Every structure is written in structure tokens, then in C-alpha cells.
Amino acid sequence: MQLTGAQIIIECLKEQGVDTVFGYPGGSILNVYDELYLHKDEIKHVLTSHEQGASHAADGYARSTGKVGVCFATSGPGATNLVTGIASAYMDSVPMVAITCNVTVPLLGKDSFQEIDIAGVTTPITKHNFIVKDVNKLADTIRRAFSIAQTGRPGPVLVDVPKDVTANKCDYHAKKPVVPERLVKDITEEDIEKVLRMIEKAKKPYIFVGGGAVISGASVELKEFVEKVDAPVCDTLMGKGAFDGTSERYTGMLGMHGTKASNLGVSECDLLIAIGTRFSDRVLGNPKKFAHQAKKIQFDVDPAEIGKNIAVDEAIIGDVKEILARVNAVLQPQKHKDWMEHISDYRKNYGLQVPKEGLSGPYVIEKIYEMTKGDAIMVTEVGQHQMWAAQYYKYTSPRTLLTSGGLGTMGYGLGAAIGAQIANPHKQVVNIAGDGCFRMNMNEICTAARENLPMIEVIINNHVLGMVRQWQTLFYKKHYSATVLDDGVDYVMLAQAMGANAKRVTTREEFEAAFAEALESKKPYVLDVIIDSDDKVWPMVAPGAPINEVFDEEDLKNKSK
Image (cartoon, rainbow, N blue to C red; front, side, top):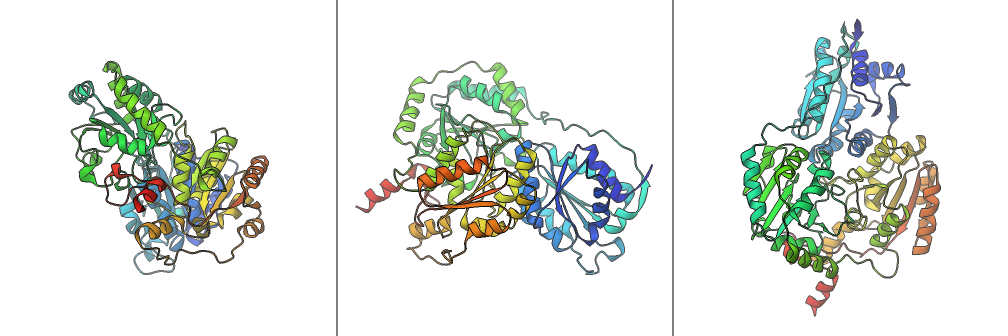
């Protein structure tokens, strides 16, 4: 049958099982929105306050479900407003399809009104992108975009469609979507045998888990592998929830704000098994001294990651879930009683501490964990509050911490929380923000209110850019350049003006009562939580230092004596 390009876009979305699109209309994409109007009972459209919010919402939808998130934007500034969200998704391997519409084909390349080469702009931050100038190629291009976004290491794909292509007609034939296959072709028996020999020789193994284990859905296989190796486990920010955070084997996050137990343990191990992690600079500290006593094994679906940031002794390339399943099938149970007891002592002696008095970030996160019974989808912005959310909430399931790890995008969380809440209507979604981050995209409270979402926004308000101030305090002689935000902005009044419930709290008792009220609310609830400007994230590793030189506040006081 003959369909317009706009009709083909909507039909292809339906083919792919898309039930929600986040976006903002404009002139070049009007044909698509007109067709979307006729299918509003099949595809829900969420009108965000800004295109960046739409891209983050699509990201949050994808991270929380594993499905492809979809966002729409018009040409020019509409398309460029997606860029930060696309880059965030790219850095964290999130499956997303962004559909933009451009000026008509004859106007391309002529500096036309609201024209931008968005394919050129996004080439470095997409897994692939397309500009479709022929309506006959549109359907197959969209299908290919969804396939690329999901296959192997996921990532964002952009499809740019000139306006006249959305109006032109061609024959359309529906197709069933191709289910992405797990990448296994490079997993060899020889590599598995080499890894087995290394595991069997190890006396002090450590398992290091990254976001790839979450993406591949490898939690069951990972648990079996950990038990068979008989090893402690640490993770990255992106790996939270892949392994049970309440397990006695779990020692916490590794790296700059990792636990002492993890940083010291990894520095002492003789075998480090890295699963679905890219060895970020925030993990490595000084790469020359990182786990320098250990042999290293890396499991990853992306061959480009093998040895990219740290040299490894052996690697298996392929889907992490499948790698673990194959290794588990032939790995004999190991025993490392003395090593496990040694790491257990580290866990007991160097546990994270919540300040005993007053309202603080760690107290707030710990109380949220208690009051949500550990069953919330936690979303964060970027900064001190992000680290506290990673440290003090115990993640027992994958896809329950959504955060911008690679790009570190301030303003990410609120949009992502909207996407996650829409995708998971029966789960409690909580976004943890700093006051600096909240200012970035707080207009999306309007979106949450319009959609009547029961999500909770917790602003950890210290009236400064907390993480930058922490660095200024420790490394820049307390030169607080451009980091003080104490300008009288009333976030409670702002939130109420945008349609949300809101309350300010200054004590532990007030927070507990207000959060209990927020949990019962059927609409968005914003909590303005006032903490001290000089609260810090502990422990910490100084930039460029080895991770075993991790220190906390007590260490700093002792050093100053």
C-alpha cells in the first residue's frame, strides 16, 4: 500500500513495539506529529519542556527497561538540543533512536531557516546515523536504526528525515522486527581454557563488574560465576545492581570514590577479572599502579575496549551473559578461605559511615533505602549526591540505578526519571539531585506534573556546586570561584508553581515525615533538603594517585596533625 513518509515512520515504530515517544514538535516534523495524532491510542507521546529533556527521558526509559528509547525533534535548534542527551546515551551504551526532521531536500546545504547538518554534528556521539533523502529507503533505514541500537554494544542512532520525504509516498510493506542476536562468534574454547587456567592458579582473585553485565542481563550467570571462583566483588557506577549489593561478597564501588575495602582489595589481588567494564580513568587512578600485582582478564562485547585503557593478560570477546554461561559450564569450584576472610575484615573495618547527627546526603540516601524497602528505581544527576546515591543505597537488581556515568551530565536525572516512571508505572522512581543540577532542567517538573507522575525529586541542597567545591577545598586552597549558589532561589515555590507538591526540610525528623508523605502522593513531589555546604564525599582518591592511597576525613585530620 502507498503511504507517506510520516505514515511509514509511525508504522515502523509500531512494528518495533514502540509504545512511548518523547519529543517536542516544530515546523519540519509537523507531518510526523500530524500522523502521530491519528495513532495516539497506540503510541503515547510525552511532550517535554525542552528537547534535551526528551532525550534524557528516552534514555531513562531505555535504561530502566532494556528496550529502545525513542525521541523526536524538529530541525535546527530542536535537533541540536538533543545532542547532550545523545552523547550521554552514547557514553553509557544506551539503546536509543532519535528521529529528527530537517528542511526539504532542495534546501539542504543552503543555510536555510532552521537547517542544521545534525547527522554531521552527531557523528562522533552516535553508534550510527542516517539522513534519508528518498522515501523508498525510509522504512528499511528505520528498521536498521533499531537493529543497530540494540545489537552488540548498544548505543544511540539518529535518523534525520527532510520534511518533503515525510510528505512523499511510496509502497510500504510491514515486516516483523528482527530479534537482535547475542554476539558469540568470537568466544573460543581456546580463550575459555586460558581463562580457566588463570582462575585455577589464582590465590587472591577479585571480580570487577561494569555496566556491560547490566546491559547483557547477566546477573544470574554472574552470581554463579562469583560463587564458583569464590571471590569478592566490586563494581563501577554503571555496574550497580548486576551483583547483589547486600551480599557478603560485595565490597562496594571501586575507584575515586570507591570504598577502602574495594580499593585496597583490588590493589592486593593476584587476579582481577573485569566483566563488562571499560576501566574508566575514575576507576584506575594512576593506571601504572592499578592492580599492579595482578594478572588481568577482561570479558567484553566490544573488541575496541580490550586493552584500551589498561593492559590485560587474557580476554574473551562476546556477550557477557554468554561468556559467563560457557565459563560456568566448565569451571570447577575454587576455594579461597583466607583471602575471603581478609577481605571480610576490610569490609568490617572500613565500612561506609553515616554522620551521627544532622541532615546529610548519606543519611538521606540511607533513609530512602529504608523507606522504599530497597525497591525503588533510583535516578541521579551528577555530583556529590550521585556518589552518595551509589554508596549508600543497596542495589540488588539491575536497571535500578540510572545515572550519567561516562559523560557526567548535570541535568540528566529529572528527564531520565520521567522516562523511567512512564516505563515503570508501578515502581517508585526517585531522582536525587543537587541544587546546581536541578537548575539545569528543572522545567521538566512541568512535564512530570502534566503527566501526573508519582515520582519524587529529592534536592540535596547545599547552596553550592558541591563536588567542585570539594575539589576547591582539597586541591585549590579554598578558592571558591563561581561555585556558590546561595542566591535566594526558592525551589519549593518554583516546584509548586509548576504543579508539583513540594516541601523544604532541615532536620532528620522533617525529612522522614516529608518523604513518607511523598511516597503516598499521586503527583510529583519535590523535597528541598538543606545540608551543610562543606559536606564531602568520602572516601576519596586524589586525581592521579594510586587507588590504594584512598583516604577519608579521619585520615585527613590525622595527616594534618
